[in-house]
Amino acid sequence: MSRSPSPVALPVFEPGTVWLVGAGPGDPGLLTLLAAHALGQADDIVHDALVDERILALAAPDAVLHFVGKRGGVPSPKQSEITARLIDLARAGRRVLRLKGGDPFVFGRGAEEALALAEAAVPFRVVPGVTAGVGGLAYAGIPATARDTNSAVTFVTGHGADGALPGGLDWDALAKGSPVLVFYMGLKHLPQIVERLIAAGRDPMTPAAAVANATTRAQQVVTAPLVELSAALAAAGLKPPAIVVVGEVVDLRTVILAGMTA
Image: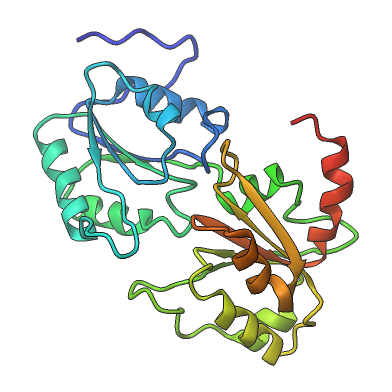
């Protein structure tokens, strides 16, 4: 089936190639032009659970959707199986879109897939996306940086490949070295994260927040001092997927939200 040409000069999505594309944190309006172009051109779309249904609706009518999302406690494809599927589809001459929530190279295992594709000699392109640690906070009225509060921000994964709190993190450096911390996938181990940050010297009253389902119609934001955040989230019934931010930028939210139109 022929595809309609794009009004913007964009690269051709060649058969036998894979595009590793970031879909952003949820809102379809945050898709890049390249991401939207890929959706309309792909023969096969291998997508994660966090990709919004409104984004998948932009796929070509004859595109085949492959759900490979991972959810805690629910059987899901292994990473090796996902990568093998990408390689097999590309070798069959298909235009393969690997669609990931956020940015594929920010806690998205995109690097692993890129390395595997390179080793298999499968041509691929990487298309960055808006990561939740920036875009999700922005929709909640929380800037990742502000001149008067912080000149650094640190992104941290809240759990490792085995599902536990990542080993090897320097909690002293995190607590004292970065004024703003953004934790991805951190709700499961949030009490431990809070405990370790405070034990390493972080002020228990540091402003903190969690943003669930960021940039979507189901977005939920809870703010509290760091030491009270876990209890506040439990009281609000906030569930994953969510990002957690710790730092003075959280206090800017009230003023910023008052001026935001949406």
